[in-house]
Length: 305
Image: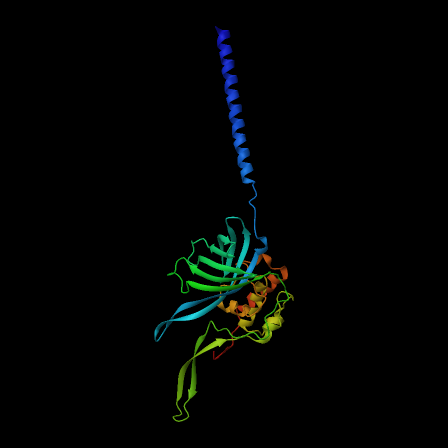
């Protein structure tokens, strides 16, 4: 009887071991299939279209008028669309504008040479691009998903394909406007009335302006010293510093800086963070410029538009 029990026990053990081995083999087979599936390379198409398209992003923005209620003002910004990948079913890339970098996914219609590209939709600035391709240009429109959240929910765009290249020699054009039009400041002015001899006061709106030092000092090429910066205006220091970031393709949130660099042909916004791209000298110069900016003063004057 003991021999029979031992035989049955042995057979049972062998059976369990065989089942485990079979299950393990089955599991490894499934794993192998999954690995094969994950390693499948999805074919890409139209690689010649990959790259950065940059240009005007324009719309009408609702403004408030102190006297007559609401009115609309034209607003133009610089937009970059970066197409990273095109497959049979999808287009992948990102949009960069106004310091905001958003991924998009969409489709490319070969018969009409057009793209429909959707940003994620979880940010109030997200929307849909409907654009047509012609040679190296993209034209079309962008519509916000949440039209009530933005002052300018509908925009047109006109973009040209450009290759971004960091060049430490890039400078502002000497014909660039030196005035910061975005931050006017009110001053109280006094004058003496010729007829009455009384001193009168009135409010004047003035804009700060830069000097021609912004065309001469390059914080990407020269090691700056305190002597170089001692007598500069606050706006000078800000522009010289932000020129470093502009050369690396930083997308500015502040209208002031964006306005100055969008006057150039070389500025292409490609990223909302370029801190790791700066050279050691650029980082040291930026730190020095920040120190001087804290205590610098602005120059103001009244300008007509």
